[in-house]
Length: 341
View 1 (cartoon, rainbow, N blue to C red):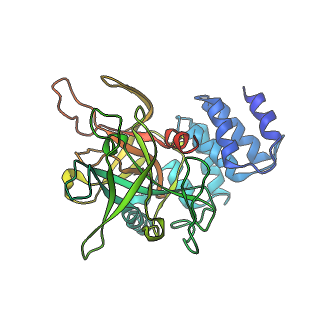
View 2: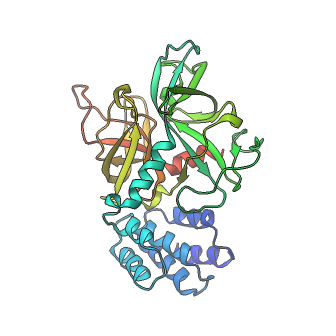
């Protein structure tokens, strides 16, 4: 398998992140193979030397428990090849207690909204939860990504109608399928809106549904009036395949309808299948975050502020009671599948 990956990667000149991800996904749970692939990129033997690609491979392996991969990341940091933030993210540290994380949390809150849905805009909502703005593609810059400026156009490609950013990426609003679809029906609510509290009052921004996946509990939306949409803050899409056991993760939600609040936990299992009464969800991220009604659809993000998943549900015990300290999130791998359809 590694030889095939090496042949494929040798043909690549740019070391693009999508190509790296495809190669890693082909390796599956072969973390040793991913670590060896990282060494090839780090040394430049058989492939163009590329430090970001090497880090991606080592992070993928480290997320699956490969001790050698974490050691390689530590060596890269010691030799000045990667930033402190990368070391903290993949090897672990107290970054969440730093001033940097305070800024991350501030931006994350500004990119998260309450969401309401109902049969009309009369003010009577039948479904509530959380949604967030994410940017996919385009140039990536520190501390919030590219600035939004100039005319915002509408694309006719991929899922049709994504808002473009000035950096070449696209804006989407993400939430759960079960929030925007009326219960026991195949039709979405007629009125769906993201609600922002600007300190002076609550403002509702109407949303339109672009695509959804009931089985994975994902809904992809866009602001109906893109020219007036609040797009100054947004999440960058991270890679859920690099998550590691015990990694700190966070979410903003609207628990019990009391407004947005930050919750913290760790990754209990980076990849888990869960069978509910009617569905069988795969590639879920299990966390220790305790959730409540209203947290559904919230972003699961890391210490760097990258979205690595989306909150979906809380398991129940045999008595039908929700289990505290046990929650699931849809992986960004599943989210990107829907975006790329």
